[in-house]
Length: 194
Image (cartoon, rainbow, N blue to C red; front, side, top):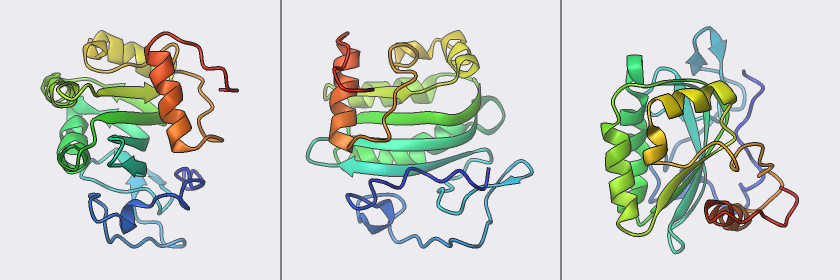
C-alpha cells in the first residue's frame, strides 16, 4: 500500500495544497515519513486524511470556472462502521460545492471495499449538485464494490459501473477526462483510446 501514490501527472496543472479554495490548502507532505495507515498497512504520505479511519483522498484537479473536480480515493469506503460518506461530504465535497464545483469525478481504482449504511448524505450531495445540472460519477469501481453500491441503491444519486469501469483516465488531461465522462453519461462511446 505504501507504494501506491496518488496520480501525480497533473501536478503541473493543479495541487490542492496550493489552492486557497481547497480543503487541503497549505498542507505539507513528506516523501519519507509514513504516518497514515489503512489497517496494518502504511499509505504513501501524499494521500490526504480527512477524518475517515479507512478512506483517504487526493484532489487531483479542481476547475472552478468549469465547475468540476477529480478526486482519487484509496482504502475501504465504510459507511456502516465509520460513516465515511459524512466525512467525504462535509470535509471535501461541501468545501468544493461552496466554491462552485457541481460535477464530481471520483477515481475509485484503489477503493478496495464498500459497506453501506443510510443514503442521506448521498441524497443531499445529489440534490445540491443537480440544482446546477451537476452530477457524481465513479470511475473504475471493482465488481464487488459496484455490487455493494447497487445493493444500497446508490445509482439513484451517482453513476458507476459500465461504461465507467476499465477507463484508462491516467494518460489524459483533466478536461479530456471530463469530456469523456460527459460522453459516457450521455450514452456515447468515446473515440479516444480510453
